[in-house]
Image (spheres, rainbow over the protein chains, first blue to last red):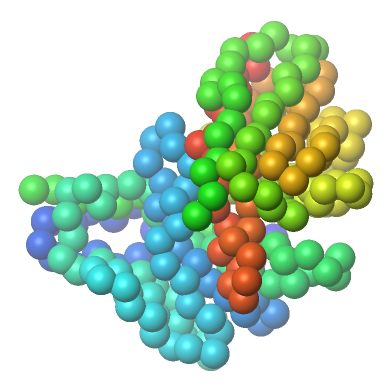
Length: 115
Length: 115
C-alpha cells in the first residue's frame, strides 16, 4: 500500500524554466510534508517542508504547495539550474500508534535540467 | 544540522554472511532511524532506535535479521544478518531535528551488494 506516490519517475526541463514535481498521498493523518533531494552516492538532503496548516511555503527558488482537499503537494523550482538535477523524494509525516513520528517516502522523481 | 557519518560507505559481501553498519553523529540525539532503499525503490523505514531502549521495528522487519544497537546518544549500529542478494540495498541512518518540526537528516548511506 503506497501511501505516498510520485507518479512521474522522471522529468526533463531546460535551464531557466520552471520544474514542477508532484506528489499525492492517501493518509489524512499526515500532518507534515517534506521534500528531499538525493544525488548519487549521497544520502537524501532536506530541501523544504510544509505543515498541514499551510498551503504554501517558499524558500528562495523552491516553493512547496499543499492542497489538503486533494491530498496533493507539489514542489516548484524556478528558475531551474543544471545543479538541480537529482532525484527528488516527497515524504509525509505522522505520529504512529507507537507514539513515534514516522516518515513515509514516495518513490522519487528524477529531475534532469539541461543547459 | 548535525553531521552524520556512516561506515562502511560500501561493501560487497557473500550470501550467508553478516555486515554491521555504523552510524556516528557529532552531537547527542535521542532518536535515530534506519532506512533501506532497494534498487529503484523508495526509502523504507526499518526501525527506530532510542538510546536505552529496544529498537522499534516496522512491519516486515525483525530483530533477528536486522539487530540494532544504540549504546549512547551519538552512535548506532545496524547489522544485516545472514545476507541474501535481496538484501542488496542502500542503508541509511537518520536523526530527527528535534523541536517543533519533524525534519529528519540523513547520513551518506552504505551501499551493500550481496553476491
